[in-house]
Amino acid sequence: MIKFLILTLCLLSVRLQAQQWMIEYPAEGEALLMGGCCNGDGNYVFGVDGTDAYAMYIDVDGDYVTNRFCYDYKSELCSAVSLDNGNAFVVGIKGGTLDNQVYDSLWIVVMNSDLDVVEEHSYPVETPYKTWTNDIYLDFNNAGDVIVLADVSEKDYPLVTNGVYVVLRCDVDGNVLDSQYFPDGHGPGGARPTGIIRVPDSDMMMLLGKAFYASGVHSIAYIDGDLNLVATYPIPWMERVWNYTDYWKDDGHFLMASQTSIYNNDDSYYAAVFEVDTEGHYVDTLVYDRADTADYTAQFGSMAYFNDETIYITTYWESGLNEVPNDVVMLLMDRNLNLLGVKKLVCDNVKIRPLHCQVTPDGGCLVYGKSKKGADVNLIIVWKLMPCDFVMPWTLTEMAEVSQTTDVYPNPVSDYLNIVLQCNDNQNVRVGISDVWGRKYFERKFHSCDSVLRIDVSTLDSGVYVYEVEKDGMNSMKGKFEKY
Image (cartoon, rainbow, N blue to C red):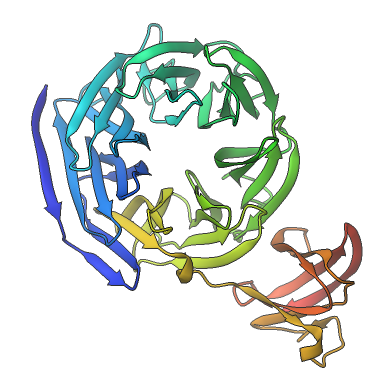
């Protein structure tokens, strides 16, 4: 039973800077913003503040309203898609009591931009499962229904084992038309979904996550229009803990954002975007923002597609389970995995974990997640960035404009490293930089003739690094340089 519903016009702290802005204000409890969607006029943002579901609607200028749902039990709003009428179809979880971790019902809400509830449905977890988790993803199928991918746990918190995939087919009012539990085929660690996307020109949906293979590796799975499992393909070459997709490149390939394991003993963790074919084979990759041995890079719902030349990726440096402030690293790329720019977001004395990004109606990007200032202060923070806010960390200059003839200069280097590329017209060139243990810190692919590549290496630790230039798939130049 709902106790009260608060709707407030919040203009507490909107910082304007050209088209970029940031919303920031204290949360009532521990806040987690984890999903949302764009309706063509503004953006919905959903999550939880303390034990209460939380919603925002933000216009392109940063003006916003909020809504907080307060019940006798816990509730969260997790993921959403925008409907043709501008409303949001939102899926979350609710139930149990305020002092336990059980969510006994899947919660489907249709909400308008004033954050009024238009339709609402609850679907209890089926026996023998104990609770729904907040790993929930959704997309439209090609018939216009909403397909929801979630999972249920077989054990009570805190011994939660993510149990099985659950897939629901819903109409746009939130009524469940069909459902399917997939209890077989997952390993001892259970199943954990990380994404769902419709397959172009087909009645099938592609599911990403950990399921259907007893070995426990992540996989791609396909279900048909009747929610039957059609095929599964493992992704053993990836060995990552999270895989997400928000963009189907063509009929045979899609882009997947992924991170390496948080607890990787060889400290080779990194975040990247992979091009993958429909059977899970590796095609290409853009590796970025590798961490040092003190931090790891992480990303969650990190890819936001606006058009083929404007794809946003967000990641962050994590220093473990402490209150050390950290940086958020945003990238702008195109459909061919070309890096177009980088932007670092820094909030003084705040630890930030961005968990979702989405495009805005004017081609920008919203970034949000979980933010904490010190041990006791939780914050609601939402950034907006535009493509003009991103800066390219490297440049190409035609050879005729420089007189330097050595392959790499200066060496040693403190800030910008120049690599001379002597190429035929329009060759495919790959340039990589790694440390002496083989950990990759820079990799870019482009078409080039004779030119000089200028790379910002100021953030690298002091030491010896290896550079490698590959032309048309053949190693043609390799050497070392010293960073001081």
